[in-house]
Amino acid sequence: MIVAIDGPAGSGKSSVAREVADQLRFVYLNSGRLYRAVTWSVLDLGIDPGDRGEVRAILSNLAIELRDGHVCVGEQSVDEHLHTDSVDRWVAQHSAIPEVRSMVNEMLHRFARSHDSVVEGRDMTTVVFPDAEVKIYLDASLEARAQRRYEQGTSQMTLEEIRESIRERDALDERKPGGRLRRSPDAFYLDTSHLTREMVCDKVLRYIHRHIKSSGTVEQT
Image (cartoon, rainbow, N blue to C red; front, side, top):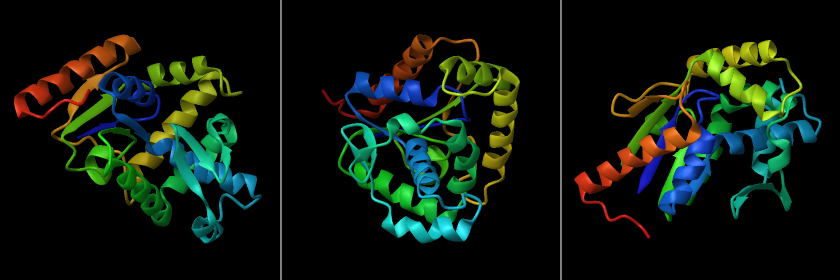
């Protein structure tokens, strides 16, 4: 069974998807972490991040894997490096490169083929898993999303700078020729602006359980 969760940056996708996967005992898959691993690799190798040709050239040599919930490049876990300002600056541009998207999508499909999964990203319900049994779209106001990122404490930017960065990211995500951010018409929509994570998880889990009951799907234990 695939539960696919979409939504813009800062809408709560990652924390909610991870908790929902734990509650359901499903595998948690996050496309954003894989895209960030590509960007981190580009920067770590000293490649010009603005040169798409050079980014494409290194893809066949990148050994990016998911191991026990960690994103690894080669033998190294890179989880702690994925949410820096430098990665934030370039990840949207790199995720718009068709060859990068193809590589990440293949990794997601490979894992999901053999596991009940909660998958989250910006095009999970519309492009990567359009036939997912459950589709969810989490949204939030720009102000709420910026405040959440600011409170995470992983950025050196001011709140206003984070707000502008998210605004620019939204614009890039909506203009991508492939995999742009769109709300699937059959997705369960939830505005999380004024909800706690616990409240969002409760609503999402209730929706999933209703679907399981109505469809006759056997829930995993």
